[in-house]
Image (cartoon, rainbow, N blue to C red; front, side, top):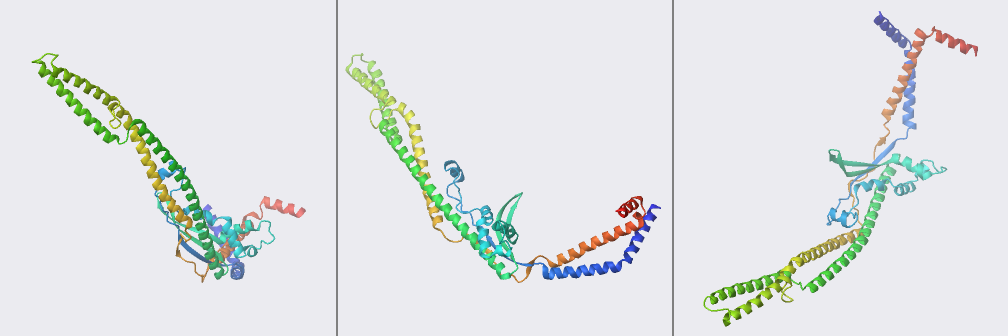
Length: 394
């Protein structure tokens, strides 16, 4: 029974709408005509012109990143502007103000009497001047590989001119930032070179003083001489001792040759003791002293070698910074230059027309449905009667 009532209600609604077909068709037709005229004459359609370019390729510094971060306090290891900085430069007020002044956007947006004409013009310009980013990557990590400047305007020639002018401004700002970065890097590197040269000079002076005080010049060669002399004296000592034992078999302790060999052994032992401790001359280094001097000498030589290599790296980096400071060529590679557009890009007129008529049709059917609902179900209800009486009293 309930299902039959619903079918009956739907049939009544369908009959009600059929009776209103003239109203529906007529109003939809009129609204369609008005929407067509609005789209044709009122809606401001815009052309689009774009220029696509590649960001500068980062040239890695010859100084490794761990050295630059640890020794130079975060010194950048790349010699070109980063793609992320291009977005910042494009969104800067300096660039937008120049575009606004060049193409009279304050007058176009009718902001002559506005208190903050540039601020409001920039807000509106953000819809007409857009920077698109082409990214590549995977696993949630991507990097910009291209940029596209797109300008919208009602005039195709002006649209083309805005795209080219914006790209020229952006390229000029990037070159200026790159030159300024090269200048700052040059000053920083010159300061680092002077500082490290001072450290090297100090190390070399300390090392020279260490050599003179300890009579250490070529310790490896000196050690060879010490070991060779020590071995010869030790062999002579052993030989004399064997000779003495042989002589004592046939002669006594007072035998002249035995006395002479013992005296010679005392001299040899004194020399061996001297070589084991302090060395026997300015050239021969004592074995005990060498054990303490070798680590110190190795440490001095290691530190001096590091400073020399660091100075070579800094000097090469300084030359790169000087080249970057003096360079005045574009680092942006244009892939698709801007062209004068032939067709309008936005808004889509057909979408506006269909959308407008569709929205009106939906509201029309909703109004007719509520009218049908009122006549069939709500007209004689207690609530409606009370509301009707209340309005009549007023």
